[in-house]
Amino acid sequence: MTVDDYLNGQVLLIDKPLEWTSFQAVNKIRWHIKQKYGLKKIKVGHAGTLDPLATGLLIICTGKETKNIATYQGQIKEYTGTFTLGATTPSYDLETAINETFATDHITNEVLTKSAKNFLGEIDQKPPIFSAIKKDGKRLYELARKGETTEIATRKVSISEFQLTETTLPKIGFKVVCSKGTYIRSLAYDFGLSVNSGAHLSSLRRTKIGEFSVNNALSINQFIEKLELE
Image (tube, rainbow, N blue to C red; front, side, top):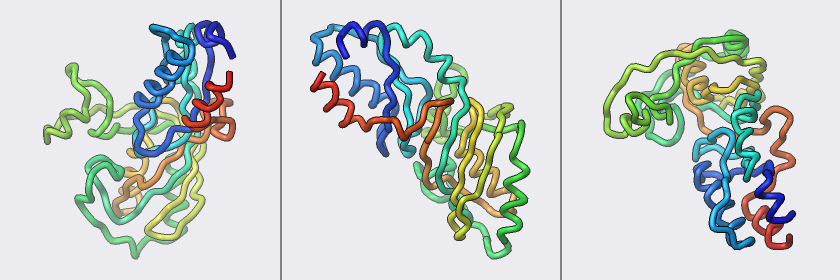
């Protein structure tokens, strides 16, 4: 790869590590490309945020390819991970502490399978209050961290596949294929309600975006090592 390749546009498949923001991953890669080629600036952006507590596929575009970011963002996504039943958190994941607990002894595999089927197709979903969506110019998570409540409108999302891969309560393993804009944290919360309990997202990994797979992605360190050898 040459400097012109990066300036003319590249699609980089990165396996984002746990606890990194997508912005941090972009910054790290941009900095190393600039250092390698002595550039003052180069456009680098990602095609779809992954929460810090999620790992997996992050599409990062460089140079002129950043113009196509919206195309990648709109593609179908695949996730795997775990829900934990019997407890909820304000953020719907492990970013915040458990705020309420619920019974799970009434939940059978039959109940779980039946509930999962109810989420297939087009559904109305309410994004978490701890999200990057803007309202009145402010990110919702900024309001949530101040303890402010705000009404969030539901949105239409589409779930084409929802498999339960493990049902060892309180852990539920899953695989989901869904449209742009789907919040897996909200799916966890709503799934808990659907089985007359509560749930939160306890792990998440994005495995595919369209035809791109995390199996072909590099870790950030692998990308840096490869860059240094170019």
